[in-house]
Length: 475
Ligand code: ADP
Image (cartoon, rainbow, N blue to C red):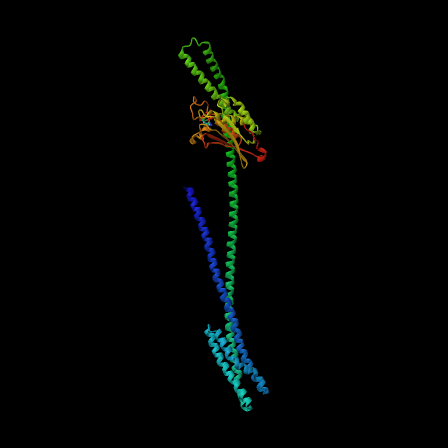
């Protein structure tokens, strides 16, 4: 419970941390967008101030040029000096309008410009008057006008106005440059913030990588430990299995002796005292003898079964065709008695234990002959089929067959499907077959034959190319 609570807490903490990081990044992003917009605006305003100052200067220049032209004309009476004056008259209004448009946002400057315009127009009127007097050749009147000094005063007032307007623009420029600088500072701070977040995330990422790596190492260690434990347990199991089999082997071996004695003495009793024994005692003795004989065969089979694992097995190349020949030699009597036919073709050479393979085929062919249909000639077919890197060997008969539901059970030791008086046996033969096939790395199973009977199939691994393996034979 506590652990669950702690896990939930850790999960919550993780979510909160992620939330903080994401919110900070979003806030920083929002702020940086705002600052960039502000920066762009400030840049625009700074630019704008420069343009205003330039236009103001231009307007002033026009007036100065007009005055210079007027002076030249008055002194020389050469009308070519009037060119700047005439140009000024032509472009003054346009220059004024341009400037007015630029300072529409600033009422103070607009007011100043209006005053400047009045002064400029007065100045231009004075210029026009003096030029006209010169043109009309009226020096006295001209002298009088010049002496009033009105033109000089107008020009001074204009200069003052221009200087005041320029000062205001300069102040605004300073202010705007300050704002611009502030935005640069903010942006630098934000960038530094991003850098810090980036570095923090990067370090977190590396820490995560580290922890993943250490977790992987831990997992591998646990895996190794588990593997070691499984290996130890398997070794223990194998050891106790071997001990059990050894025990079965030893006990079945030791049991044989007292049984042999019982059988011998029961036979002696029957031989030497048959006349003195009453019929009931003779019957009991016969039952004892039969029981002992069965027990001896059971113990012999058990011994065979347990011996399989106790004795060391050596492998060699074994030609299955020769194995079958040997087996048929051993089963000659049974084959003749039952008038059976055994067919075998294309059998391979496999790597295995000759004795065990002999026992395997003996059990299977023996069963095929034993479990035959009454009054029918047993036919046994042995065949081999190569599939990729293994062989499937089949032993097919036309016997009584096996119900599919018993297909697995019959490979268990002492499991039989029939009464011993109908079909003799101990029920160990197929268990031995299974053990032998598994010892060779294969599996064994049984399927019903299409036209009645059974097909026992088992596999053998092969590392030898197919062409080298096939031998032919027949019987
Ligand atoms: P046993 O032959 O001594 O009874 P096995 O282990 O060889 O023992 O066989 C187990 C049982 O499987 C047999 O009792 C029999 O019922 C069934 N069986 C084995 N081989 C065949 C076969 N070829 N056809 C039909 N039944 C079979």
